[in-house]
Image 1 (cartoon, protein in one colour):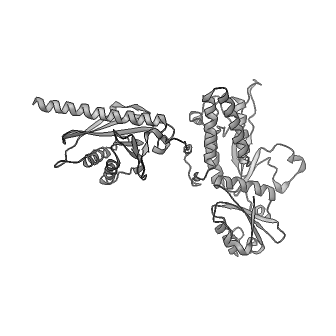
Image 2 (cartoon, helix red, strand yellow; image 1 turned 120 degrees about the horizontal axis):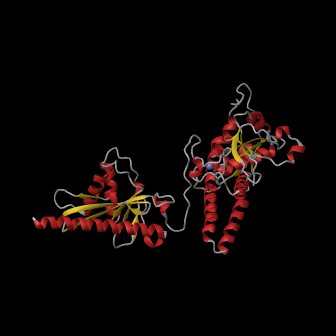
Image 3 (cartoon, rainbow, N blue to C red; image 1 turned 180 degrees about the vertical axis):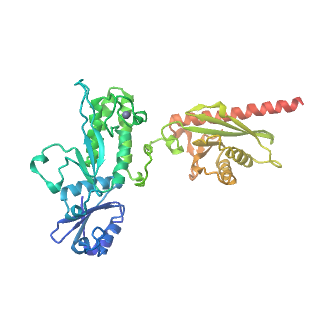
Length: 447
Ligand SMILES: [Zn+2]
């Protein structure tokens, strides 16, 4: 809902993300914009006596605005979509005057013609972003007859960077084409962003429809229909299919959640699927994303403080990678304590950047061992590795310690897959350390 404030109360506007509407003395909306800080942006509009778009002219937004409407949104994607919807509805005159080809973006859904003789072969529309929608029935040239036709463009969006990012994320949930597709798989087919050369046409259409609905501000409707599908499959005990819909719902809710940080508009890289919150403590908290990723587990073995050995075992994609197992004989002056030995082990390992760093360093022990391991990072100047890649797990207490978190996490509260992987790695590092130590000890006794 839109709230209104008098111009004199501009300081009472919320300093929050959302959309604002500037209205003149006749309550006609003259300009609509979005900002991460409504108050500051509106103040800028009202303050500037010169108009940045037409520097020679006085700023009409400053001279004509009498009241200000605003809507707080949960996040930037929602503000982006709301702004587009309101510009379409109110057709504010200064938005139109400010409009030039570079300023507004439209999302187009271009049908792919079937040029083959096989009439059954249907192709899904592809999606583009354009400044000049060819068939879009723009409000400036409103035409009753054309308005009846389905509109293959959605917009205008004022922020090209943001709409591109939102679409990139949506593509991970609802794969679509961005150009006519040939008969062979393309680069996006391989990363599951593309429906492929011979897609299920019904599914493609559904994906496109869902994207259209989301961009038209009807995300709740999309969520409702996904939930229905999920229920249908789980009622039929087809849990794998139900899970696909569950993931779509979670991913979609995540894009439109408080946590979703808009990437910078100039970020050209393909962002990963956003982290999805699960009830149980899962892989994503440890930087694994959806997969098992890679981890190294460390254990120290010694007999009465003599000849200590540190073991390093490596797991890739959830499986031991024995070629990457390593051991370090710890030589430190005097009787080193557990912490000093762990610090030394990690320090030695970090000196080998040629062994690819894992997603997670799993240390045997508790808080003390964890901070000892972390202190090894600073001993390796030039080693740019984040604290968050470390965690400690003790043999007896089934608890995990991670940096920046006072309380430990009980293994019982973890996602089963993660729990099993961590226990497996911990036991494997212990086994590897002990067998090595026995061998070493035997050698010594034989001398
Ligand atoms: Zn493809």
